[in-house]
Image (cartoon, rainbow, N blue to C red):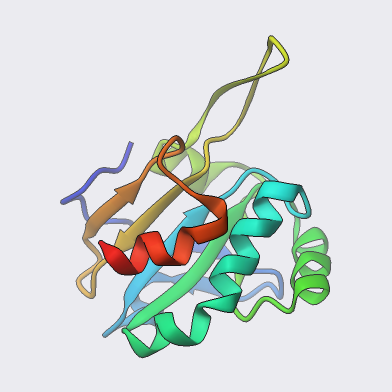
Length: 151
């Protein structure tokens, strides 16, 4: 897993429009890279909408936001349009970024075990170094932006 103090890879993936997303694209800003399990599920929608509702405040404090899940670009486009999300979503369909960041792992629901994205947020500084990691059990989906801005 990528941890505090680690330099992240420059190339992150492609967004819902097929644009390459690189850490260098956010030079001079802190990048909030948040991994979430699935578009349009209740908790993931609450988290995305909380980041949307606080997006201007985050920009004003020097943050950029990028979401990542394993859904494809078409799913991301629908999610963005439905909830007017102002930030890109990386379509990590091959789970490469999930695995590189160490957020692809075993989950459990109703006693059944399966593999999936462990909801995790990385705050990456202007030099591409991770300075904060908010882990799955720590994330409050309804107040996630506030958690990031508090640091």
